[in-house]
Length: 395
Figure: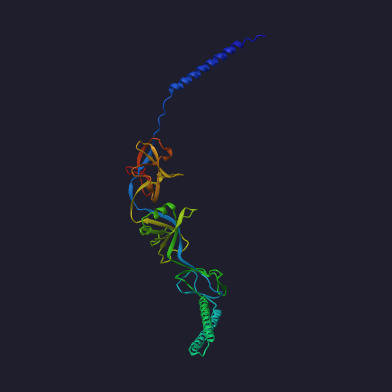
């Protein structure tokens, strides 16, 4: 059998390979001859030129009010409560009797101690007279040295019993005084935890609590950076006198009295990276009560020259806070900075900027370090952060 179609097929295959080779060669030549450099796309960005300005540093902290003094009213002796002499939640004065305890036993103990003291005093007087007479006749040889020593011993023993009786009397007097529990200072008394008829003792726990709320303390936490800046001042005590402290309540009202910084701790909380601090505010009308959440506003009286950078330009990574700048060649550069207190929509810069730098405020997501951009000068409202045209119109 003969296959007459073999040659045409081979010819068709050879033709196909030839055309494929020509196509590949053409495409290779086209690529080598048609390549051209890709032009870099210049991205427009909005920039704000940062400059030094006179600023009044301010800080805000969330704090909680706390009494300036507090005392747990606890019984120092075991006795029955006879009377509760205060109204819960009312003001009390220093020395006021708050709780009266049963005093019959204390009175009896005091009378017994006083009687023993009287007997001890009489014994001392008698022993003193005998010793004096013995010394007089011992000079003339009418009393032996051994008998004189006995008189001296009796006198010393009488003196010892007298001192013991005096101590017992003092303890009994004190126990009687403990049956009247008085306010240690003027302030406000809380809820009574026991009723008349209950037997209380030192282990029973507080009968009530008295707190002093004028002045009222505000306890808050300061981060490490602000604390170090505070400690590095020439004189911390003098610097604290240059601060104005105001208080904003939860309902938005301002406390009518200004406060002062009264305490900063000597160590940093390792878990939180903060330092405990405290401010004191006058509270004569008792408008503040312990336990309120408040906003503490701290403002430095004397203005300082600081560079201000917009909040919208500020970024942060694991290495710290930074901004993107446009250099003299219109290329993007990264600059790490250290910030201080916030001023409205701006942050004060402690280190990293010298002033005059063009900081990118719009288009940050479209650029990266080193790329060329077209900077468009803008201005920013220092309070609201609204970006405006350089001429003053709102963008």
